[in-house]
Image (cartoon, rainbow, N blue to C red; front, side):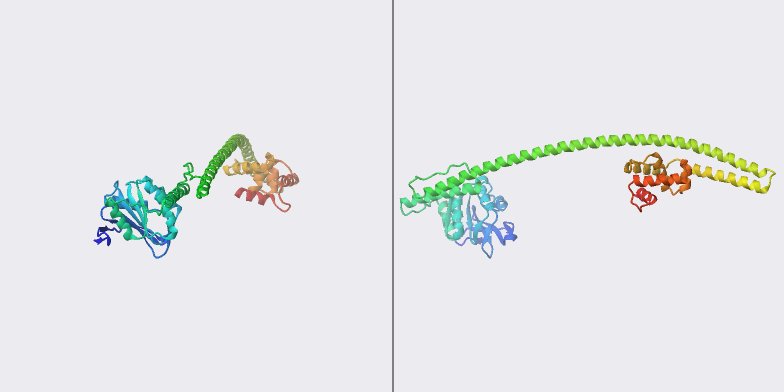
Length: 407
């Protein structure tokens, strides 16, 4: 086991008593010297800015050393430390005020000139029950601990009464600065020296700064509250708009459901009519076939018989075509007609039927015969349909309807 070269006290080290700060190129270590002395130091090859206080590491050392809840002496080696982050400052003060045990003393040593003022600011904030010393090196730090353990009083040395007064004012000034900057304590009064003291303007300036920061904080709080109210108002407006949109959507859905129900009823009525027509055509076809058989049995000239049979054959073919044209609509046909009517509400029922037959690849004569008009009349209707659907000059209705059915 290692021993302290100054006090010969045993030194306890463990592999987990360290924290690696890879991004900042240093490692924090803590050692235990004797029974109740903790030494904190940084392992690095360059000057560093300490980023945060390793509170978790400190608590681990306390727990594993059996020192949790017990007062200790804390030594901090500040070699290579030129500055500390704001987070570190807050962590260090929180460690003192919120984490037990109470420190017998905190002793800084090897402080660089850049860090000296920060160490003095920290010392100025601590309660009188915790002694803070800033010494030159490790040897001085150990001797200071041993002296405190022996009950010796370590007093600050002053050249005269004026020097002691200056030291007290300096401590008050640094404490006020640390409270404002590190802990954001903006309501703690700043103890001003007499107005004839040459340091009075500096204290007055820090008190004025504290008041300005307090006012800025009030303004920021007020602005935050106003922003929150503005946000809540906008959120309320958005909710109203959303509810209105939902209500409109519900109405549109109800309207669509009613239209769909009406279309289903209309399709059902058309199906009944088509069934009636289909049955009538079927009966007529049977009659025509019987008539053909009777003509075939007549004792007349073959030429006349052929004319009669050809004519009756045309009638049978026409009836079969019309029966095919009046077959019941499929679900796909019904969906096609519904979508087409929604896309082109100007189309009437006859226009929709013509569109369906065009899409099903019936020729002009078959379609004209199905709806009871001439071929020329159908061409006139198709021309008007072309304009109703606002198709291009060279765009055919048939290609448009086929592409529409596939979309």
